[in-house]
Image (cartoon, rainbow, N blue to C red):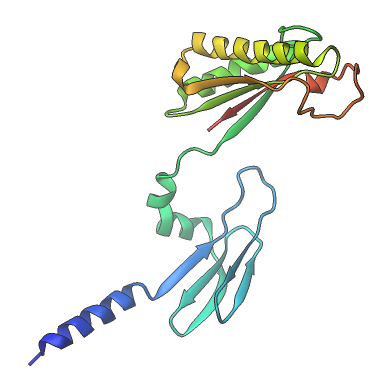
Length: 195
C-alpha cells in the first residue's frame, strides 16, 4: 500500500531524476574568433576553450568531454532553431566632403540592401561618420545626411521605414585617430548594424 505522503516523495524523486544533469557546450563563434567560458560550482571549476568542449554536472560528480556538431544538433536543435539571427554589421565608405559612396561601397550596398530587405523582423541602425576635415558642426550635419541618405536608399529597396533609425556621430568616433583637418578615408563612413 502506498501512503499519501509517499506519492509526494516519489514525485519529488522523479522530478529530481529528470533534472539530475546540466550541460554546457561551447559553440564555435560565428566570426571564427576564439572564445571561452568557465563553468563553476561549489565543488569545481572547468574551463571550456575549444569549440564543442562541454561540461556536465550530475548528482554525484561533474565532468568535461568533447561534444560534436551531431550531438549539439540532436540535443539542442529546437533551441538553436528558436534563436533570432545573429547581429550583422556593415561599413560603407564615402568620397571626401560629401554624400557620394565610393565605387566599392556602391557595389557592396547592393548586396547589403538585399540581405536587410530579406531578413525577417530586423532592426537597422544607420550611423554616419566623418573624417576631421571641417568644423565640428558641419561634420555633425554631414554625418547625419550620410546616414539619412543610406536610410532612404534602404526604404526605396523595400525595408520598412519603422525598422530603420539613422543618426550622425560627426567626427567623434573615428576608426583611425587623426589630427584635426586630416583627410582619412576610413573615417568617412556609414556603419549599418542589423539585428
